[in-house]
Every structure is written in structure tokens, then in C-alpha cells.
Amino acid sequence: MSNSSSIRHFLLLALADTRQLQLLHFCLLLGISLAALLANGLIISAVACGHHLHTPMFFFLLNLALTDLGSICTTVPKAMHNSLWDTRDISYTGCAAQIFFFLFFITAELSLLTIMCYDRYVSICKPLHYGTLLGSRACAHMAAAAWASAFLNALVHTTNIFSLPLCHGNALGQFFCEIPQILKLSCSHSNLRELGLLSVSSWLSFGCFVFIVFSYVQIFRAVLRIPSEQGRHKAFSTCLPHLAVVSLFLSTAAFAYLKPHPSMSSPSLDLGVSILYSLVPPALNPIIYSLRNQELKAAVWRLMNGCFQKHLNCWPVSANNL
Image (tube, one colour):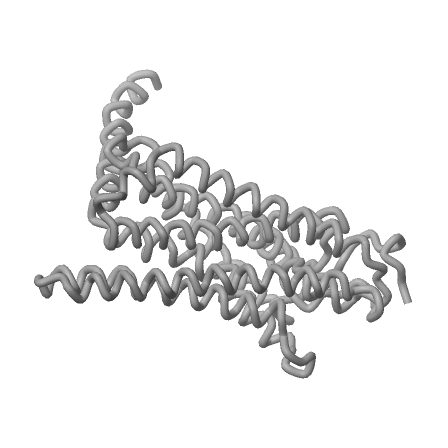
């Protein structure tokens, strides 16, 4: 029996037992993180530098890319460090910070996905009111509300979960700190308040999902009235992957945080589910939400070509200075 006041560190789940598999996991995590950082970084740079992309849709895409960068940088570096150096430790403060920032970014991501769905709904179903409903001031207010609500949600959950007495050791069954794993360490009679908070958050998340589904139903009805078959195909090829990623994100997160019975939990299952909602969306979002957009893709290529040409123009100067 241990108390939270005596815990100075937690033990994270080891991704593998052998050194070869640990290095393989390190390489896989490195590849995923580099791909996500590169893709989201290019999107942020292209939208920030391209004045013709300063529209509501690309403004929300920029915010979504920021949440993807934040969530990847919160969980992956520590897992890579542990795999490379064959360790499992994370400090008490580091665990609290990881939970706070992970909740902050995934809550902001869900809010932004809901806002982006609303943006598509207004654009397709009410195009004449687009400028009124999604002006610059309205977009700024919606983005600020998304980030502020995410901060408040993360603060409430983190403060509450680390105020619980921990009576079952310090070993976590996950490669990063998350609320369900901390709850397993708490005394059974002390976690009712956190379970209540999780229930409220789950109902709010379910409300966002219902809004997204309802909006896409209206979008699909409008798309089916498009006379051009090519236009319908383009709309469906964009909307269906959006809905698939949102469904994957919410279903796996709900399973991780609201398991109907403890017997459904196992280290391998928890690990697989956590990867699906913590690593897959940040890696897929740039492809599904952004790089499929021809206008943004052209802006990314112009940005890359501009940087390449600038590097070539600077090369002779650098060579002469040697």
C-alpha cells in the first residue's frame, strides 16, 4: 500500500522486452512523429505565409495542425526516450504535465473538428450566409472558445485526478500517463468524483459527435443534388474520410476512458486502443483534412520550392566565404 504523497515517479508500460524490439519501437515512433511534425509544420507554414489562404477553413486547419503537433510532442518523446534507453520512469510532475497537455490538445482537437464540420455545413448548405456566420470575428471567437474550454477541461481533470489517494503502487499499464491508468491506482472509494467528471465529458463529446453526424447528413443531402458526378465524387471523397477519422478518434477514446467492464482491459488491448486515438489521428489529419485540398497542396509546394531556391541562392555565397 502506498500513498500519493510518497510517490515520486511512475513506471510506464514497456513496449517490448528485448533490446531489438525496443529499438524497433523507437524507430517506428520516430518515423510517425517526424511524419506528423513535417506534415503539420508544412500546413502551419503554408497557411501562415499564404495570404490567399487566410480564410475560415484554413484558419481552423491551422489550429487543428497545432493540436496535432501538441499531442504528438506530449506523448511520443518520453516513449522514444524509454525505448532507446531501456527505462520506464516518469516523474510525478512529468506525469501530471503529460496528462494535462494531452487532455488539453485532444479536447481542443475535438472542438475544432466540430467547428470545422460547421464550417463545411455553412459553406455547402448555406453559402449565401457564409460571410455573415463565419466572419473573421466569429472565427476568432470560436477558436478562442475551443482552446479555452480545452484548458478548463484539462485543468479540472488533472487537478482532480492528482488529488486522489493512490493505494495500488505506481506501475501504469500504458506507454504514457492517462487518466484511466491513474484511476486503477486510486483507492476504490475515492474515484467517484473523477468518474462523474469523465461521464460529463463523455456526454459532451457524444453531443459533438451527434452534431457532426447531423451536419454531414445535411451536407450529403445537399451534395446529392449536385448535377455533376465529378462534384459529388469530390465532396464524398472529402467528407467520408473526415467522418471516419472522427469516428475512430471518438470510439477508441471512449473505449479507453469508459470501459464497460474491467475484464475488457488488457495491456495489449489498452496499448492498441491508445495508439489509435493518440498517434493515428495526428498522422492522418494532415492527409485527410489538408493535403487532399488542391489549393493548400499548391501552397505547400510553393513554400517548399521557395525554401529550396533560397537555399540554392545562398549556397555560392556560403562557398565563397569558406
